[in-house]
Amino acid sequence: MDKRDLSQLFRERLKLLLARSDQNQSAFAASVGIDRSALSQLLSGQSTRLPRAETLLNMASTYNVSLDWLLGISQDEGLASEIRESLEIEEGTGGFDRTLLAVWHAEAAGTKIRYVPAGIPDLLRTDAVIDYEAGITRKNRESQIDEKDYRIDYNRRPETDMEVCMPRHMLEIFAKGNGVWSGLDESARREQLAHMARLVDDLYPSFRLYLYDGRQRYSIPYTIFGQIRAAIYVGEMYLVLNAVTPVRTLTRHFDNLIRAAEINAHEAAAYCRQLADGPID
Image (cartoon, rainbow, N blue to C red; front, side, top):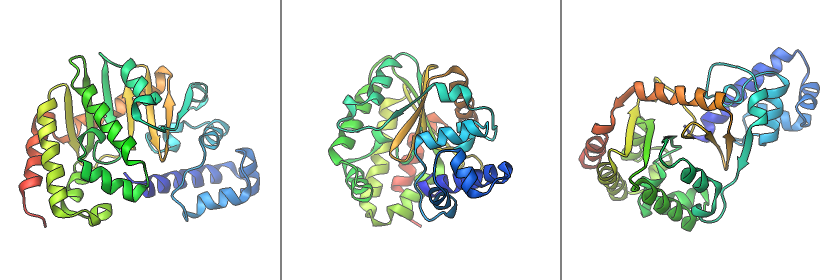
């Protein structure tokens, strides 16, 4: 799911909160700690940027909805009080091994990590794809390579247990060079899929990739570290939940994605190889 889809869903839920509040835009904006012009921008859809984490938390707390509902993770509105007290914000800078994300991976060693990526899973990307994405997103190429290498090393450890679940159509779009991938040449796309197949084979069964039908299921990117922590990817930062209840809610959401998978872990490498070798429509 890209930023436009995420911001559109957030905007729809923000409009619903505004309608329920029975307030004008100025009063609603004041109630969540922003000015009216900022609220108008969020409602207009002119930008894909989400508000700051503090604003998201104020909205959830003031109007008694859960943060995962506001961000589109769940249809259950729930309550925000427990989440508000247990939230951290992480903005990764520098090499991946020096971020809190690396610390959380290390802390979760020996437990299951569940991961819904925003695109091609970080550890499965080729350098060519990293270069291409760095050119689009302006993210640092070296830090992305650091992250890829760290994650591969992590998944080679004997105690690692990681499940990754992503929409099947994301790989199909990539294979055809559609959307953001239109500028990446066919040979680089085929090599990426072949590389992905080799790594999925090599890392199985400690690393297991599942593909679900993105037309039937929906998820924003997140990672669950065992039973103690979940990190939700929101643009250039992570909202990190440490309370038991939201982590369990995300775990149930992930397990439902796994149950709905059309390509199971033992089939994933062959499917990637099929896309790498097949005709480009």
